[in-house]
Length: 435
Image (cartoon, rainbow, N blue to C red; front, side, top):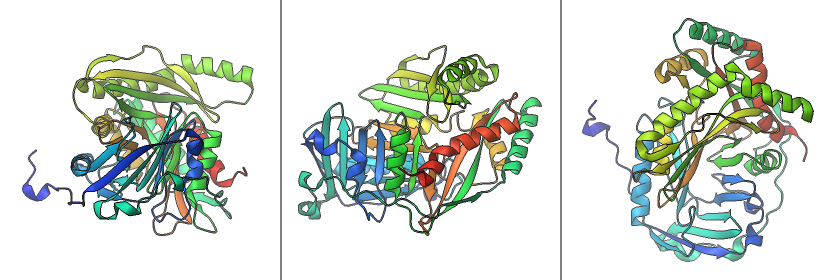
């Protein structure tokens, strides 16, 4: 299909940026989430796992795009921005220099679209090294904070008066949608579909995203705790990492709930690893990722057998797919090639997407879309926005939280409903549980 000139959208011109990265005493970045200041109108940015990663605040530049070309538009804007930037980087590591945090809508038809945000201040920590990056428009470079401005901030306030209500579908209606999906799979219309459900959340006062980030990091330290433009969560699924020519993707599909009894949970993990239903679901997801990465890699490693990833609220079948990059494709472009994987959509993709649009009765927004960061070299990390919620941009005392389940021929609606409830636990607990 050809694109008319009227359909092509060129990124709007932006003022040249000045970025400087300097080393930071690791002690100043010992707790990345603790240095996020209160009161940022656009909210903080975060990509943190086990104390390492990136956080940012302020907004030096940003760009939003929607529709089928949203990934391309964002990539063009970012390349133009860093191409004209003045950069002084004393470390030259992945994640130093100018960095954009991003989150992108699952569906091309979602009005939410996708956004890249370049914070004015980014603090990073990795492998015992820490750094500070400051970014500003050229004419205001003197006003940019320095290392002395990085400090532990007062603790954020816990949400009060938290209430949950059914979202687009009641639990019973959602279970009925699962039953309908199983019927269509059994009839041969498709092999797998992922169905999501949502809950509406209200609180007595505007939510402080920093509270949710801290609680999620404390309870789910094996996940990537993220925040971009009001989207906040803790994802166990790394869609893609690009780092100096190496590409990695972690695939999760197939889930079972632990009991808290170590001996019993070991038996459950073993049963998950043998479950034909879960292994089938996992195989679809791994195949979709490997097929999407293959055109960009000179060699790949796709393990034949998954391992069991233990989280505090669920256990997943997991496979780490790795490859050697054969071209200059950026981490954002790789995320575009992978999205949507079978882990959040289904197979065949077109048939699964049609069933999702018919049976879910909701706009996923940025749930199940890529979320992460990209640097000037194109390196970066992008996860799938799972176990998350989106704060309402008009009324920040409201948010929606999401969870989804992979449906295959052997799926039981009641079991899938229970699994979706387990996947909602991280956000529910972050909102309600005392520290």
